[in-house]
View 1 (spheres, helix red, strand yellow):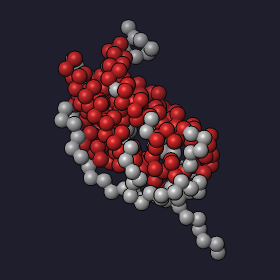
View 2 (spheres, rainbow, N blue to C red; view 1 turned 90 degrees about the horizontal axis):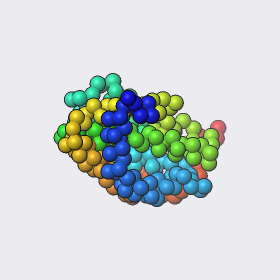
View 3 (cartoon, one colour; view 1 turned 180 degrees about the vertical axis):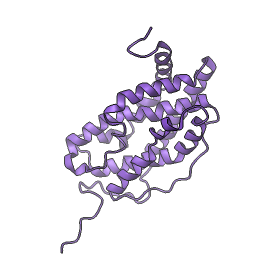
View 4 (tube, rainbow, N blue to C red; view 1 turned 120 degrees about the vertical axis):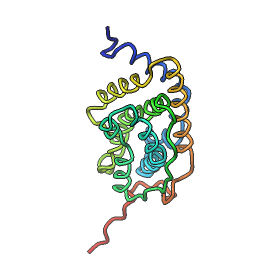
Length: 219
């Protein structure tokens, strides 16, 4: 029997992770850098600042996370969920430097890694909402610096359903689920720490409306 098109066990795992991280989710949505993206006065500077912070987080933790998840998940499934590439391309389109980052060790267990995956892939759902807001307010000035927030495109819902199955497969019992909840809370804590930090290296101090890449000099 299925609930909402998903196996009950998958739905139960996702519900438990959601409940365990509800407070952390609310806290990160309230971080000024992120809430600015949904405001009427959002600028390309705001967009670029958030992309730089996301890049720092994913470049720091994604390599170790994928190394751990690779012990239990297909490599192809991980490659479809790689985030540093789209973020790097977006930053290059905006003329922003790629922040220097030192990769950190990944989770020790597959169950903890499943919690991290829940948080990282869950950001693709919020990214669609953010992108609609940015397009409504910034229009064509966004250019192609939309890859990260739109990384799964029209397949976002299908990708999330697949992610739920991948996560549940790594959580065979209550002990594993508890480890996943702890991993998800740590992932949110690390993301919050990065989002609430000051400007990344090379980030302009002003909140200008113009793209960061200088316009070509007149001939």
